[in-house]
Length: 354
Image 1 (cartoon, rainbow, N blue to C red):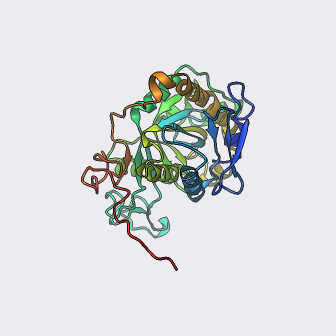
Image 2 (tube, rainbow, N blue to C red):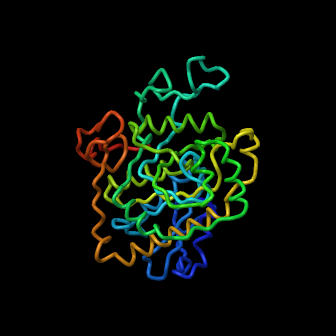
Image 3 (tube, rainbow, N blue to C red):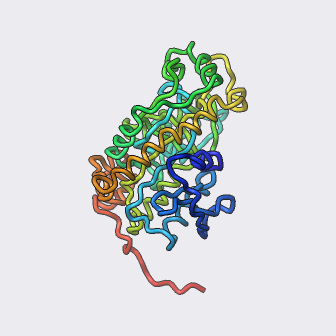
């Protein structure tokens, strides 16, 4: 999503993604090229940060005539804030759900009703604990859990990078019992938990708890909020639309996020000091994207003919809150297409543009 996340994959011994540098119309002006190995089996792109950049870049990729992506596996590899109730800094997480937590009504907390726990209210609803009644379609995505389990298996024995700064920061969270996972002196690990998307880079206990609750609410109690980032729902929406059009396979997506910092302060630290303080594990989290991610990439390449070319069959629902790819979402109000896939021909008509 930004330069350091891309650079950590360059100059590695396993493969050379700089063998081909392909300029793609529609990519970010800051990151105009896809980088590929000489045979073109592994490629990398940098989307640019936040939702608009991510959606624009991935849409440009999906509709580019330069690539055939119909059997491509997509590894979203980025750093994130991490919830100390679930994981610690430096850890690498693999998500099943991505939740667009800030797609809600918002009242400044200083003006919220006394009986509201937060100033965030799901759209179309009248209280923070009501499911949104006005749905845009990007609130929740669910990816292939069987593929996620494969990725967890590939990375189960890796030794993740750590730092003295990260260790010292963990120790500060040890006085809060609910933060025991974040304070774990054993250091970073591989974890299965879910991710939240928000263009706003937030800090503090109250917003952290608010979006924990949003994650549970939007996923009907199934999602476990552990990381926060700015792009994934936008990336997934672009890939979902491409999947409707037959350009990609949405069941071939892996969401991998490493924890560069905690999403809330330790006991006694202010939200402002936490927000503007140094990142607890910026460098280790970047290195760990490579340490864990390269095992996933190599595993897919090495097992291509036997397992991955034909795809990993999903046993769970895969898609968006609308049910656009068919089936019934296990969150939200149910498919708006009656369980059938949305037809890319539905509603098409000829328009004379002037």
